[in-house]
Length: 526
Ligand SMILES: O=P(O)(O)OC[C@H]1O[C@](O)(CO)[C@@H](O)[C@@H]1O
Picture 1 (cartoon, rainbow, N blue to C red):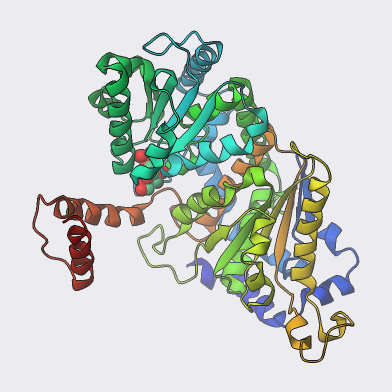
Picture 2 (spheres, helix red, strand yellow):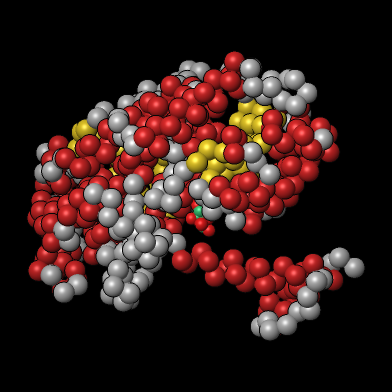
């Protein structure tokens, strides 16, 4: 029996149909207690989902679905180390990376990271010409880039002084070149991060960085300026990185879940190991909550079930992620990989096509910038786009009045999206001709997550919250959230096209569009 044929699924479909015409404004008018009944407080977080299009009956039916899908049993399987990533035959153990008592192999690498960070910070690790390191360049892509990049920016207020940490990911030479343009080779450390150590972009960038370094300082400089993070120790050795400069992690850590491992080395250098360990502790605190809290007070479970409601029963195709925090400006990109690479799939655990929608498109931008870009469509575009607002209550940076203005905008937007505005409510000065333009339909659902502050512990909680949401959705949609076969095909075709572009192979076997585009690329070089 698939989930869509269960009584729980059918009940939700019935409720969705029955409530289709109820406007959020009516729901609030009918129930003064709506906020307190649809808000969860935990660990300093406040999750308000009262502006979602639901009522107690929907919430109860979603909770019933959680149990019908046996999510708690899947949690137990993950925790027991079963190979629940069945297409790759791997366990899913990223939670072990942040455990208070981590496995010995994890503790050993954390210890090495600690010692390494201390040497970089106190200046006892010297570059080849005897100078201390002042620049760190993380070379990686996807899960080997987005997590440390996002967190380094989010925790800029906690940055270790005297060290600049930057990130290069794109195969476009402009990425590396613009970073290297103001680096001194004698004081630059490269961290080459790749789970597989076969990723084209990362290896190409790493080779170019190495050529830049050795041109200035000679071949012998590599061991003082290059370290690697990988599960593939043979490949790191083949690249010429000495074993003592390699920080290991393991195939039971998915790339997009790997920030907690040595993949976070650049972050650890940026904020110091004590702060990195606080991030781990925050993740562990969210793990305990997810594993132990009943579904009705469980934050990851609630986010997952709201996604099911909006996607599968109300028909939403996308979700806007709107952090009202410039420090969290990279969060939408990070969550895009976490959610869309995990659950952007159509084949279930039994190898069959699912008969329901899966991951929505996640997109977003830091508030208030997004307001001046795409909110017009959210307010008057007529599309259902559930919105997820995230705000931080105590700011790290506030030169005066900024934070109040930021929060006012955040609260105002979710209020406006919910209420809308009728023609009668348009400003009195509005002329009859302009009145139709002043109407806002409202009824746009949203969730608001308030964080007490943005420190390492809180950020750890936040990331783990989304990780568990993704895991739960994989279970609910009967997907393996931990593989990513869909990104392989484009890589295969790129490998075939590369020799045609470099002139080593003739163009052949291409459709007319690809052949025409290739010809234009080649013509531009003549
Ligand atoms: O860490 P690696 O092996 O270089 O992979 C980078 C990224 O590439 C992907 O495999 C997608 O191609 C991601 O899942 C991963 O995070």
